Image (tube, rainbow, N blue to C red; front, side):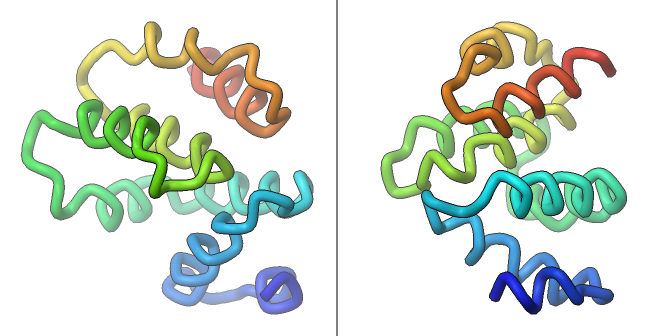
Length: 116
């Protein structure tokens, strides 16, 4: 799957691949960074696709629920923080919880989101 990701040119395939890649708790941080870059480049479409089944006004609740749910691996935490960034609610308290994360990619994403 990593090789497919490295040669990725299609958004739809990328969206399917990234979730499977992020299931791996040992995924190299460089792949995480590449996925983050992909999602930044496709932010509007990603948010639309990821939140289409979320009730209006409940994006932050959805993201928090995912972050708390043990069925969603910690390796996906930064993605849910990115989803939370689309909420109209204040996400600063949520970001503060993750800004000193042991996972460098999570801390990097939080820093990026706080700068926006």
